[in-house]
Image (cartoon, rainbow, N blue to C red; front, side):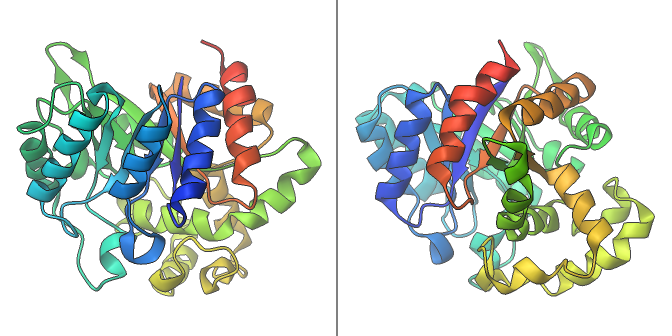
Length: 317
């Protein structure tokens, strides 16, 4: 199973440090989140990492066609491809979430995302990896020739993941590759798990709101949990998006069962061994090819090192 890392680039030098740890421990991909208003510039961070690493794939994870026109994306990616090996560039595009909401804009329609990826594919070398981010079947169905795979935001729901993969359809050259994005927090010992869960509460809520907030009835969410989740999502503050200690961290205080469900579906928190066991079971049930873990944790150096050194080993070839 392919393991990737996604990072919010508040500090380019910090992002570089994590990418170097990821590369040195055998992780194949490092994604730089694109929410410029909240977390800083993405493309300069991507360029810095590419210039200071030698093997790991790097690129936007996830960008959108709203805050930058597709022609701007295409020009930036094409320029990076001339400066670095095109095969080390991996671009993931979706409709937009915190990047657009935080500046008062609306996410792109799924068709706009498809057209943006087609525009970029027409300009950049074939060796550049282009992937579509999707949390629902309409978005997944927008995968087109020249797009290399899917990144799914539906969490660890095997039935929903199979539904999304089916919506993408098949190709003459074989099935579409699919990876799932999760909030990750790997720790050394089981007794650290309660603390680790507390540290990523806001991040779990953030990814869950985007994945299921637009239609829980259709997205495999138990009926009894929907009212509480709807209330929590309605009070979500994008100014505190994914930030520990912010107002979003406490939105689930009165919803213990709902919080437990979100952690089970959208998070990979625990030791490398326990997380690997869950991921292997999910892979068997869903057919995914890989997973991308976030770095919104107090000690991302340790988290990334554990992902590279222990999780990959525990998952096996």
